[in-house]
Length: 110
Length: 113
Image (cartoon, rainbow over all chains, first blue to last red; front, side, top):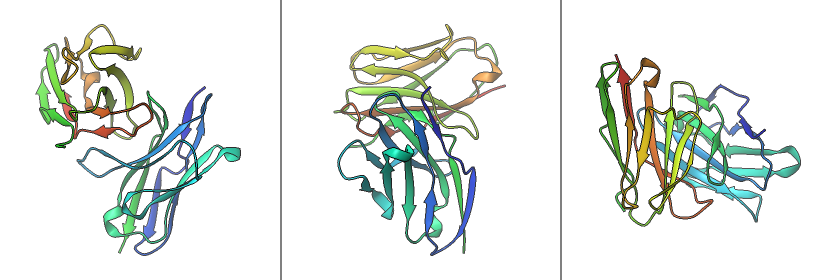
């Protein structure tokens, strides 16, 4: 079965600390992988995507993600979190009809 | 590029009424998607168009739901005889190519009372 698991429902970090959000997927074919961010009252914004090539991908807002095929993972990272990064983060796998995780809610302490 | 536009932003309707939402995708995007999102959940796929052709429709979409994209540009999603369980955020997204990330609109929040 195709699925996306985001094991952490909620994470709190201090401003300036590093961040890693986990994503594991199950997909029968070569996956297209995406991370989206959703701020309160806002639509979903694409942070980054991966299909092939370098397994470490850079995205917007200083985020990066690493694809590890052996672990079926696509974890999102940021070296130093800003208060404005507080939002809901979704991992999704495609390519066309995306399958989504339940999201990880990120809170940032000043 | 003005992004994906959805109207209305909010809709409150009485149970049993019909509602229609509109989505205007990015003009050069030929793929258009509708998703539904409830609180604490990720988006759920509803349907997908490539140009004017509706290529896939979720089993979630009962007979009360219909979507159109008559000229391959804007799309409408209609819900007939609304039920309280239809209350959700309805999201529209578009993309240019297969595997491109979607660009989402801000959504239409439906409340059925």
